[in-house]
Amino acid sequence: MTDTKIPRLGIMDSGLGGLSLLADMLHFSIPWEIVYYADFNNLPYGNKSKSEVKILVENSVSTLIEKGCQAVILACNTATSVAVDDLRNNHDLPIFGMEPAIKPALNAYPDEKIAVLATQLTLKEDRFLSLKNRVDPMNRVIPIACPGLADIIEREEWTQAENYLIEIFSKPEMDEIHSIVLGCTHYVFLESMISRLRKNIKIFHGNAGTIRHIFKSLSFSEKKNNSDSNIKPNHSIIYISNSGEDYSNKALSFLEKRYKMVY
Image (cartoon, rainbow, N blue to C red; front, top):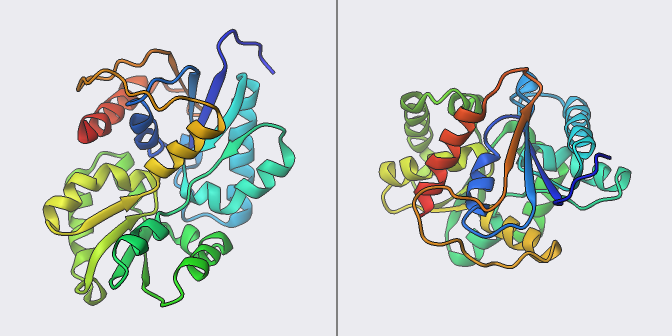
């Protein structure tokens, strides 16, 4: 492991979706340096086999450990679904994952059905099915697979993303839906768009709960940064990928888009 004077926190995703989580984290003071790893050569994960994703996530986590990270976040619901348990068994450091915010949505609206938008692989994995069976005895959760949507967001094709959402909202099963869970970190970048298309819909995602858990586990304080619509982290962020390209400008654009969305 590479020695670093400042502890390093690794964050991985298949692409830029995990930056929605990082942007939400940057509203707080974080005492660690952050290394963000994007597996561009293999995105998206949602349409791959479980065995493929396990290997890819293991490789990504190993890269972050080689970069000196003392803890790693899988900022990807699909990666968490298929790989987090094995990773925790194989590595002696904290490894955090994400799961769809089904329980908060069900608790907030106990008499309503909720839709869960996620990748095909997330929705068919045992981890999701176990969560649903545990917290949804009345079968109020309607899973909706969104193949290709993460890719559309990655390419910043926002008009196409809007058309994709319009098609989803036109499904008959969506007529009685008043709450929606975004089960992919990429989809969080569409939060404002969803609110515009369905003005009264309530939106849930796992970022806030994940951040609270990470901060508690790593003994970070939940001290807010000074109110400012621009990103001014009190630490450095290192962006790496396996594509061989410098994507820091695009990453900053995604960070700022989400950061200002919640400011």
